[in-house]
Length: 573
Image 1 (cartoon, rainbow, N blue to C red):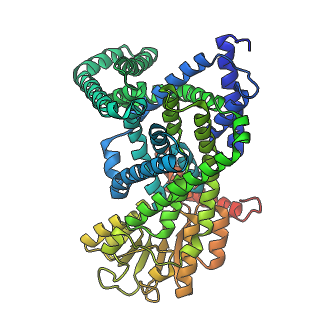
Image 2 (image 1 turned 45 degrees about the vertical axis):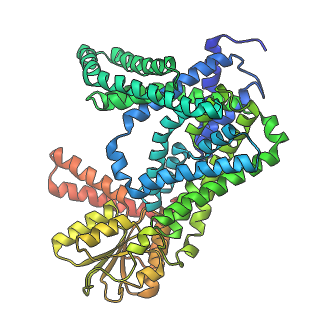
């Protein structure tokens, strides 16, 4: 076809991305799926609106470099400390086990070569941070136990991409030369890291000070962009992946006082080029391939889901979490991630896989991403049934059993179900007030710390009737349910009232439909953290604006009254 002017090609791509992103957003899907699908529609295998693939590939490479550069700016050692054992060791185990199973399935079932099976294993070992974060945010489960586990594993996966990108080009080497090629690549990588660290200690601070002193945002942005692409060029000259250099220089720049400003300036540019990258990936997928090989695509998708679901489920259970938590984590992480596309594209460039093989991976990735919201909803639907099963059974569960409570239970005590940030603040307040309390939490590491401190606590899922029965709710004064997971809150309330129908319950709630259900069950107080935070913001704004305390109280009373009217409105969700 006739090649268009480069400016027109980019304009078509960005316009198509806008349309695809808007449609995906309206359908409550991650926008990355909209970019991939619209890329498939305008690509050479469909409408053929854009023919200058070299230009698009160059823009996509810049997008990948900027993605990895910002990842380096955002990742810190502190994050790795926060993810805990299940995030660090569980994340490593998940990658290694999934990779090994991918190699076995690729070699034994599909009869692929060892290098192709190895690439398949690497690709399926990663999950989508974008998809998972969006689903967890929409469900209000970012701070839930399974949400924290998923995010911890995703962080480790994102970091592991850097090493994988060094390995992928070597997979095309013969078996006898692979060890030598790997050793050479690691030597080059070590050399580059050494140069980057030395530059970060002496050259970068001097350069950034000079640029920062000019007080020009344009020059600052140009400097950051040149550092990112210059590092990518350096690793390219050394025969390594360009994304490795971009990540390392981002990691080095993170240690400077300019890191936050660099991230703020480069993020919009990164988002634009990353959009081009995902659209370009979609352009490589042939709809005809999917139609002609639908059975192969279906089998591949089923195998990927089965492997990742079982691996994540098994690892989370091994670290002592309940079957419900393990199933939710597995259902949320079985898709193929956005960084997997980078690995697959690297495999095409290295001649490891063909375009058809790439189409198979891309089609499988898109389908698994589309199925993730449905799988999370299905797992949540199973939640009440799973809540009847005993919690625990893994490594940590053998060390932290639900029985007994770590210290004698007092009468008229408060039971705190969920010891996240909200639960910890409540516990601190009760301790200051001299009120006895018992904590129930599903996180074995938190319970271990509480027991070491001599606090009254039980390990287990508070939405499980068996676990709740270990606390004498007939003697308890109040049950506080702090879960961010709406379904877990409802299940816990039902189980608790089944034990003691007269129990006073204070519950956390996010949405109107759960609020109505909890009120009908008999919950005495409902707390909406977002609404309460807005009220406190307003109180402080009026206070610093010089309002009198009496006027502030009257305004807040009117606000709460309006909120009550809004809650009873039939228009509420």
